Length: 302
Image 1 (tube, rainbow, N blue to C red):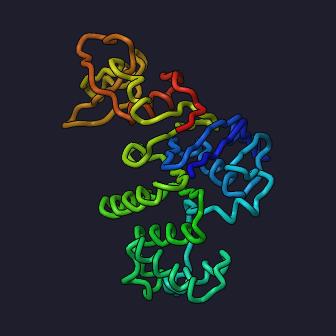
Image 2 (cartoon, helix red, strand yellow; image 1 turned 180 degrees about the vertical axis):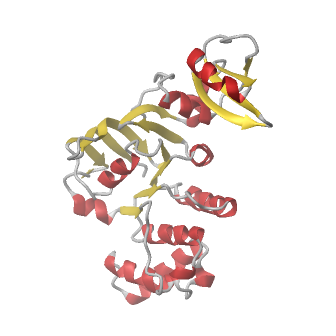
């Protein structure tokens, strides 16, 4: 039965004065949910808090009938977690380490544990290399092993933090397919700064910056907020500073020796600007730059 993770007023300030979370409120339904934001936005702090690895200063988190901030043992029994820096024992095989982690997860019956390990290695396309030392795995293979261990114990909530950073295109596609399959029946929170990961995978998403939720909704709904409001012009690189000071620029990129400037405005900001179809990347940059105000509620149920 579908259920939701409800976050209300979550705040966290570190001893050095950095306010990593500032009143975060979100409702995350079953399925793939993308948490998009730049490095330092507060994503990892939120993920570690949900994974019971650190305390919040204020707020509540409810997952079904579990109080996430108070009943950490119950959360851990139903949680799968792939952190950004997932370490492995390089001389141990994938099969051996997954078996060991399964024991720690409470799978004490040898036959059941063996069947579970084999099933997860097949699901993550690692069965044929199950006896290979993890130190010889590629980055993508290690990430798939990370998902295998996160799936131990049939979790209801899976958190993956920056899972595709550094992967080559083929491994990213393979990892995307795996996440999409997993996300059909459980809550999967994908924390990333890569916009295409969210647009390709997630039915719901939120953009977070400086510890605050800027926007939340479906990628399609958020993109529609910018329909008819994104304008583009090719300029010389020498004119870029002037453009930034004169127009509400949200992004720039080089193309064939020229610089393409994207601007958010209700009308063409100057001669030479042409309307372009908005993308989720435009939404992301506009939100981070403070040029897009939330008209979609930041608390949203499926």
